[in-house]
Image 1 (cartoon, rainbow over the protein chains, first blue to last red):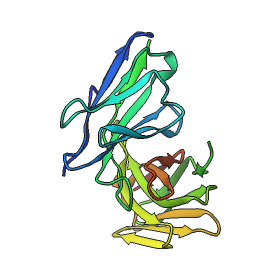
Image 2 (tube, chains in turn brown, green):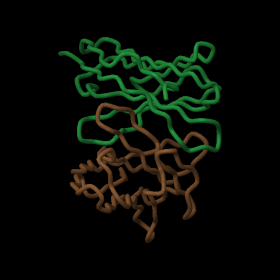
Image 3 (tube, rainbow over the protein chains, first blue to last red):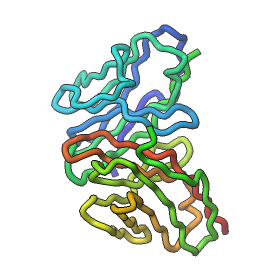
Image 4 (tube, each protein chain N blue to C red):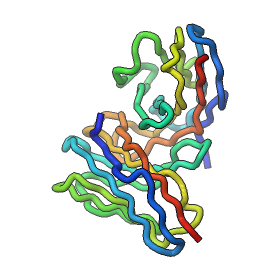
Length: 115
Length: 113
């Protein structure tokens, strides 16, 4: 069964450094998402992306965050200047459509640790 | 943000019996509800969903019930198996056309042999 893949599985970065998290969505999917889960808290929506632009974003997704689809297969999340509170599990997801009864399929996540 | 709540952080059920996981929501603009299962070190895996225009959806051992008047949904697993031990998340989507999912806190289900 096709799956969403994320790399790396664990990223350790110094505070203030830039980090890029990478995702390969399922090939025929058109909508892409990033979520995060801070330890002990809920899974939170960050951003959705369709047709090479952001279609929705949360208040968490401020100017320090950006997303990109640099080629036909990768979808990336960049954090420009990381803070301690960015430490979390980051999940990428994709779906065939953004509407109707099409579930989002998640990758196994990247654990981001900011020191 | 307490729009989707799972009030039981954990649940323990004997193998072969029914597991019932509950979820409450506050926003009547949710139109679509999903249940995800999550094992340690893995991402959430989609289990089953239900549209707000239905009150029941069944898929094998899994059934989701929706009570719109009570703003409550539940996931029934019958019979429960050891492989069902995981964290279960309830999620809801705001209005048709929006893509954002709002998650509950999760319930850790343990199936005892």
